[in-house]
Length: 139
Image (cartoon, rainbow, N blue to C red; front, side):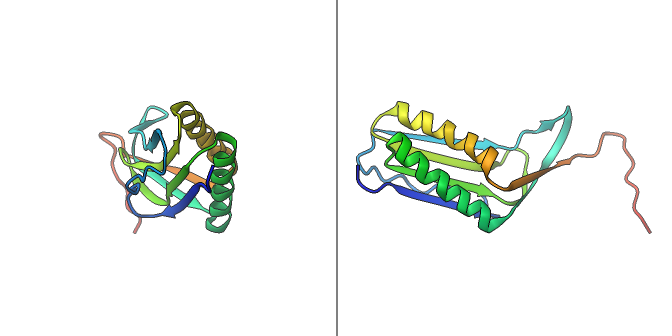
């Protein structure tokens, strides 16, 4: 296999995966991790993500290259949001491409598992105020 394309990115902007360039791939699998509207049975307005940027990018690079080698991928793209991400918006996007679909599916899932355990990105849920709750402002 030729050198795979590996692209990782941390951004506070909405996620937009680039147009796919085939490079001989027969399968392209995209995964979007979207902020859920509920957590612990409470409504979320969103999640605030914080990362140790240098370490997170380093780990994402390692994971992308490991996945490309292990699963025989043509390309790997991993983008993760930082800052506030509203409920319903994607916080992570992973694209894998390979000659056959099985490798891309397995690689995509493996990348997400590795990201959750190895990459220093932390999340803080931001809950919506309960109905009927009174907001108290300090003076």
